[in-house]
Length: 344
Image (cartoon, rainbow, N blue to C red; front, side, top):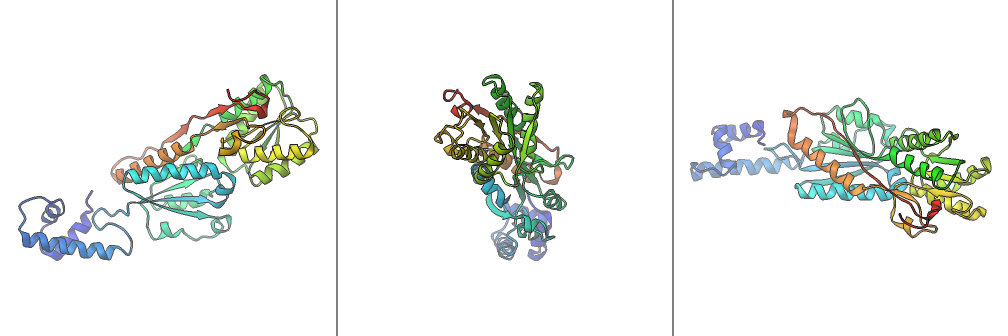
């Protein structure tokens, strides 16, 4: 794809037609050596000057993808964010793009500052990773006509592409398993902030399974979804609901923190309280007891997001944008923390 304004500038300086510039840059025959050298010298000079912005003077591209995630995503969903990033990186490499990653905080999002990679137009498109990023930041970026893809986030009605896990259905299956297979009636759901779509969808799966069994939902909300928050919240849960026999945690970090709290309080898992999680982070199969959880394909999600973003970049403004929502399947792993006898 040739940027006509840049070709016109080269043609003007060289004193030739735009078609001649095009033939030189595309290595076509029929151009005299002197003209070819003059055009290429001017082209190289413009390339050097364009280094200030990093944009190619002909295509107008930086061949760089931006990846933005919240620092909380690292502490709350480290496993997922790591493998998401690996997936994006592999696709970027395959198609000749660089990957520029930056982190944001709550304090930063409370300001009106614009991210340097956006303000200085250092990237051709951006992937926003995780539900923790404020919608205002995403929408402000979209106003610049920058191609955007979201991972584990969704802004309904905003025309943005997104890649999501199968949150609702997976937690519904976990909760139903506790009810039907292990006869649990007093089940608590440990959730994170309501503003995160992954939390909302997983909570919905829990609620639907409880409603179908005519059981009362019990939900605890946490500001963070870390091992520490799971540990501290689990102690409060047992104090408030001493009758509980099972816990559905919004992710594996919360689940393992809950198991540690149960162990400290003298409640063996799963004999006294069953615990299940979400994410299948690396150590859960080696934790004691091995954690029943949902395996998500985080690297594949990163690949899908990267491929979609490059498709949007390469398509440019010449193609109608029909936003896509891609939801990746997940696999439930029944281990001993729910009362089962190993993986099945």
